[in-house]
Image 1 (cartoon, rainbow, N blue to C red):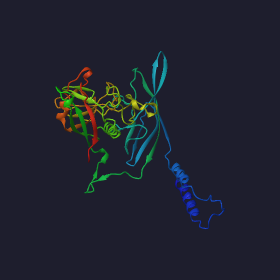
Image 2: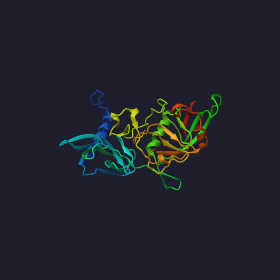
Image 3: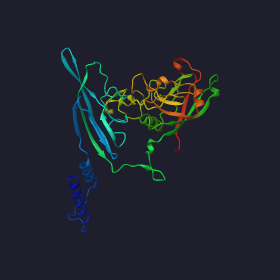
Image 4: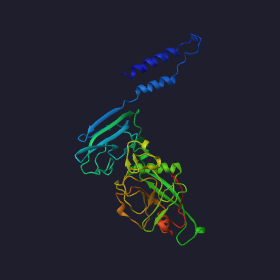
Length: 362
């Protein structure tokens, strides 16, 4: 009611002033209404209030959102306690809010609705808060400042029979990768161009697919190279910064800075943005798998990826690296590329170049 009343007053004022037809009462020409000021006032009155929730290690924070709600996180922190030399010590760290599906809230929740909670269980695949250096280190206190926003209504997609379908953004997407390479045993005059079609699994690895597509949209992969190729194993590329395997980053903010979960991107340079692992999604490193390269630490994927040829099935990577797509056409070409001549650090003697990557028509 406290929102509706001021709005009604403004509407009445607007109607009254707009109905004046007797000219300018004071002759000063200052009676026009600044609708931008009124709109700003209305928007401010309708803005959700910030909520400050706090608790200790005995209380778990969680929230359930309806399909027309999304959450904004201002601050999410934890205080850990450890005992040393008869004294208690406390450390403050950034915390992470995650959905039941494993979606990380950066500043805003990535989807409408769902159940979100403060991630404090170190045994989960997210491993999203901290790694205690002391076995006696415990969670002492947590603090979350957030607010919940609403939209008019959820927007669903329907087919011709008026049957509700999954939102189109979650449908699998197909891309075409144009690659230029020199076949094994040949030289530069025999450079070959091939097309490889890859299906991206948006539902199984939403963050990885989102980042990959954003890099494609930004043109970051155009002219990038496959810098590391190992026969009977994989071909690795996507380092659009240096082309050596030392560069590349996630295309957007997903809650991780060099593999460490932090509550805001403000304290992390863009070239340190990394992806949360989505490796336990049921997708294996079968022939044709498109998977995210990373360091030996969790949640360190960026822009680099690798593709498994037809004569390889590196099952030891399952559950470690995130598979987010499969080659549907051109796997023979990937296998041929995996057999090119290489030199030091498994780098091809002749560059294997990603000429372009494009999104296929739906």
